[in-house]
Image (tube, rainbow, N blue to C red; front, side):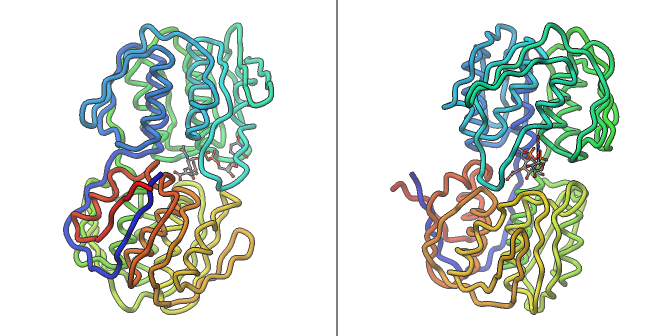
Amino acid sequence: MKRMLISGGNKLTGTISIGGAKNSAVALLPAAILGGVSTIKNVPHISDVNALIDILELLNCQTKLEGHELTIDARHLKNTLIPHKYSNRLRASYYFMGALLGREKYVEIYIPGGCNIGARPIDMHIDGFKALGANIKIDGDKYILEAQKLVGTDIYLRFQSVGATINIMLAAVYAEGTTIIHNAAEEAEIVNIADFLNAMGAKITGVGTNTITIKGVKTLTGAEISVLPDRIEAGTYIILGALIGENLCIKNIIPKHIEALTSKLSEMGAALTIKPHEVIISATKNLKPCNIKTLVYPGFATDIGQPMSVLLTQANGTSLFEETIWENRMGHVPSLNKMGANIKVNGMSAIIEGPTKLHGSEVIATDLRGGAALVLAGLTADGTTIITDVEHILRGYEDIVNKLTQVGAKIELEEI
Ligand code: EPU
């Protein structure tokens, strides 16, 4: 167990370099079992990636991680039950459902884990697999998926689910005939996964729109792909720059992927300059309040809502933060209020009165992005903040302590 100690109030200046996207990497690793020997570059060093490497090894895939480059040899895969202690370490373990169903037509896996941000059902994944011809048995917490063969079909998602879109793609690449996913999610990460699968020999078109067409193939080879930059890590540090930056440069980003955030920041009067691969941002005193409503891509990302709520505590007036994707995105609010914020939660919405002075406190990270919000609050606050349950944060933010220390933050991790 670790805790994080933050001594707040320092201005941050210098450059933070953004790593590979967690939510892309966690799908690319399972996707690699569909081919032979693959290389994934720009892999972030986060605990979710380690958990997936352990599952790949369990399935007898050979892996070699050198720096940020991961080689996966899936030629000698042995299909085996993925036990609870492996699947439960992260949400994305469920991508082995689609990938193994595609390749092996048989999967035994326990339920996935992940942040406690809502009920997180997987009915759309399961319905998609069934539509492709799989039989699904649920035995307590264990799923057994099997099919004689998979046959392409039209699948209509009732919501633009990232996970269901990717999982169905992973299975459908090996289906006979054509699968069309209607109302598919449009996230940039999905394009990254499809680029990898297409480099392996898949025939996927329409990614980045809400209609994805997958023509099934008989074999896929290994391929090379680079994980796209993490738009949520980028967004988190850009918000930090708006709080306490002094020409803080966030580099290795794709500005288009974070436009919903940067346009809100401009609307608030934040001092930011957007360049082709970086954003430079400084704190300003007169931030205007604003209303945030999280939406599917390209709307304002739900994963940025909690960090953004910290900035809204420093705006001059009343802001509304409305979450529409997850029922439980307000777990960080009691901690922010303990630090001096004035936030009233009503179901999935919060009214944030600003500006309020934040002071250091002992707080608990209840989930990944809520934990990141507390890091931002701790760095902004006067005095010392102690964050416990930081394992949530380490699941998704690569090298967070070093990256922040390099720009002048006083932050450390301590074993407890
Ligand atoms: N949903 C269902 N049934 C399903 C699938 C989803 O009802 O079968 C509902 C969910 O309960 C939720 C909504 O649909 O209300 C959206 O879920 P989605 O499937 O899009 O989310 P996900 O794939 O489980 C990914 C990211 C999340 C991110 C969401 C939305 C990964 C591993 N996780 O989750 O990231 O919030 O998309 O963008 O890619 C995070 O990184 O902190 C994180 C939670």
